[in-house]
Length: 347
Image (cartoon, rainbow, N blue to C red; front, side, top):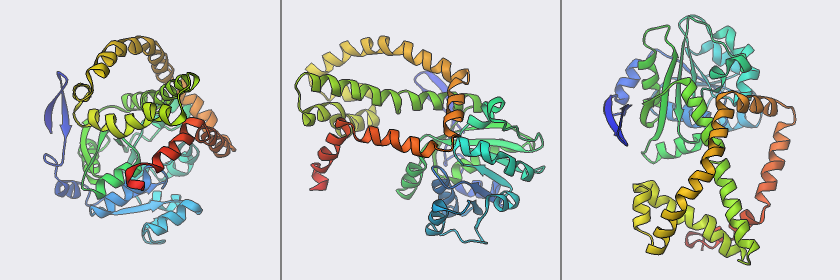
């Protein structure tokens, strides 16, 4: 472990330099890692662990996703089983189903959580809001978490490129006395770039806030608002999209992602610098009350309850697809389809 300075605040982080892959293999050498669910996080974590030499099996019910398991090389009866069989065989049971799926599947999984086993998560939702989800683990098992700060697809892609995706980690319950070491070993095993410590509560609340805020919800709302104002004032779809989305994702985002917002500002025109510096505080003051409202809604469990209620409906998938189709059909994103075709790499 190493002490790192994060903007003046010291935090402990773990990388493969301090905790090697060889050490991780040694810590988990007697474990059978059962990945339950092969949707968003399952493929990346399972395949990375397998490629890194860990003993991994997958639990997945029959259907379209089961076929993906077969394509990825999981063998029925050897490394691919039903959810119940995998849970029975596994010593580390990884709950990588959707949040709604975890709630629905909990009665099937709980009987296999026998003393000495480990229950693993990549999101604190089910445990943090256990009063709403009904997920209360037995006291005689370890309950741990490694939460990649990105999609399972990114985790796998970056692993194959020789890079790592940053992850948080937490221990909710340490029955063995070795839960933290086990958690860090798991994080190194899935190919974490670096690991930083958190709690189930902090991970769950920050994750839901981020998804609804700057990572997805707020950014979509901001982009739509700017695009609409430009279009309402006579700018063409191409011009509005380029000034709203294309320049952000293709030019400026990589700059501040690489070296920070100040560095990106320093590499833009003086006119852009002045305008950005003047308007950033105005946006902050306008948006912060909304973010405080959002955080309160997350912290109190209101957002969790909305997710539970909506995502457990029988027609959830159909409603979701309709909402995503409505977004896809908006002029801004349809303009984006054409703009992307005009990128140099597509010509």
